[in-house]
Structures are given as structure tokens and as C-alpha cells.
Image (cartoon, rainbow, N blue to C red; front, side, top):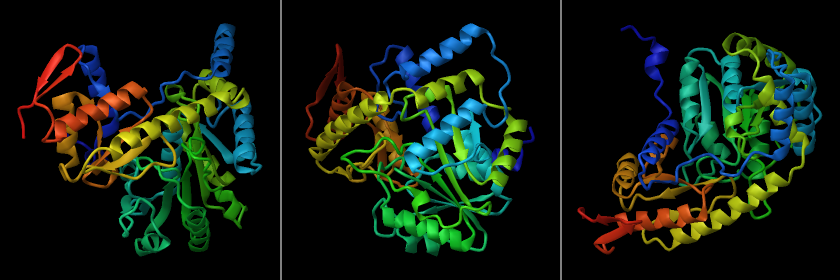
Length: 405
């Protein structure tokens, strides 16, 4: 069988594969705990449900414009003004079937084969694969000081004549860290000066803790003309707990937005008009659900960090936002894939191996589940890894016996 070069270069999404594994084990009645998930457990806002139900009852479910409906673009204009204090026009907006597609069509619009796409490590697992799908070269920038926050020096050392774009995910998946305002200022100014595209993946920007805020990239932009190379990606999946609705968008210069829309028109056409109605309802409706989710996640974060800090040999940097923490388990096993598989096999706790996010020896743990899952999940992990643990552990009525050192 003949497979294309791009097809051979792209691997499957490890996060989606592990989600599938969890679903299979759960369906079999296994007492599995998911500490790897990227999906809030709260329900979609009632305004979203009401909006989609009303339109569904009309029976008028037709094709949507390729780059989004007029009303959806109005909602994005409002969202951008409310959150970024920047007035944009409909021609600046491309609405897609999820923020992932918005990012993908942006990359397809700007990357040529052999161009380089930079992103900071640790990074979301799809960034390198998206670069490869464009025939481009993925370049991970790992902070030299051992933190999760890069310096401009780290970025500049990886810039070459082939560098076409840089992605900044703020706050970051998987570390949960917020990049300092000074760093955002520097990278906005640097990319403007060098003529490099800067893609701000802001999908988690509303889910931040301890009264902190993410820096607004528009505050540091000097060129708002059609030569602007700033692209801001967002969507309803995380803050509104609407992962299955698959509505995201990009805000870019008008010429680039038109090219993105052309590409999307040949990929999927416009996103579902029904799902856009739901997104409009969420954005224009009462925003209390966002604050409720944010507060719940902050409390869950506190519980998880407290549990981990009492775990000998584990190093954790408390996250500033998102619903992930990136935890150093290298004392127990420097091979994160082997460790993740071990925990799933022995104690039925699903975690995400850090190597997939660009840093070996770490596990990404999610705290968007229940407090019960968080506490019991960490207890099981402790039991599996601590050589001084009791020989037996009960999970419900099932007795586990340590048969490893």
C-alpha cells in the first residue's frame, strides 16, 4: 500500500488515543480514573442549549457561510472587544469547526514546505503534527533554565531564515503556566520587527487562578494594518465546557482571513449553523457559568497540588490556569510512556506521558474531574510507586496485590 510522505510523517493523537482507551475500559466496568482528560465536566451554558434547541425546532438547518454566520461573527466581535479591548471587523474573522481547525487552516495559509514553525516546550501534542501536515518543520523551544517559561534568548537562538511562525499557548497546555506580560510584549515586538507570524493560542485564557490575568497581545502591537502578522485563536470548548460543539475561530488580517476561508471551504465548508447558534448563545448569554467553572477548577487545582506536595520524590509547579499540571515523576521513572502504561495497568489511573508534550520524565495530570477522582487517583499512584506502601490495596471490592518492586 502506498502512503504519502505527509501521511507517513504524522502520528496519531496520543491524548485522543488514551481517551479512547479510557472509554473502552469504562465500558467494561473497570474502575478506571481519568487524570489525563482535557474536558470540563460541567454542562454547557443553558443559553447555549436554549439557542440550539430553538433553531432546531425551526427545522431550518442549512449550509452556513464558509467563514461563519453574520450573527456568529458579531458574537466574536463582541468577545474580542470584551476580552481584548480591540474592535475587529467581520472580514478579520474565520469561524471554524473547533479552535483546532482554526489553527490548522491558519498554518496551511502561511506555511510552505520546509518553513519552520516554532513553539515553546512543553507544548500541546498537535503542534508538531500540524506543522508536518503542511510539509513544514516543527521546532520546539525548550527553556534552558529548566522552567516552563522561555526567555526571548531561548526563542532567538532557534530562529533561522526558515522561521515563518511562532505559536504561544497562554496559559500553557500542559504546564498551566501563564507567560509574563514582559515576555508577551517582547515576542510581539520581535515578531513584528522580523516579519514572523505570531499565533496566540488563547483557548484557556479565561481559566486562570489567584486573581491573575493573561497579557493582552494587542496591547503591544504597533502595526494594525493589513500587514499585521498577529493571529489570535479562541473558541467555546474550554471556558464554556462546550468541547463537543466544535466551534472555534481565528482573528487575523483580512487578506489572511480570506485565504483561510478559501482553504476551509474546500475542507469542510462552514461549521454547523446549529453549533454556531449554541456558541452565540454562550457568548452573548449570562457568563456566570465561566466563573463557576473557573472557581471549581481553582479549588480542584489546590486539592491536587496539596496531594502532590505530600508525595515524596515528586516535583510540581502549581499551575496558574487551564486544568492541567505537568508533574516531574523522573525520580520514579524517566521514561514517561512506560510509567503512564504502568499506572494504567496496575492501578487503572490514566495519565498523559510527558514525552508527548516535549519533556521526558513528566506526566500531565488533569484536575477537571471530581475531587473524589483527584484524591483517589493520587492515592492509587502513591500506592503503586512508593516501595513502602502496604502490600494490598482495595478498589471497591477488588483487591490489588503488589507484585512488583
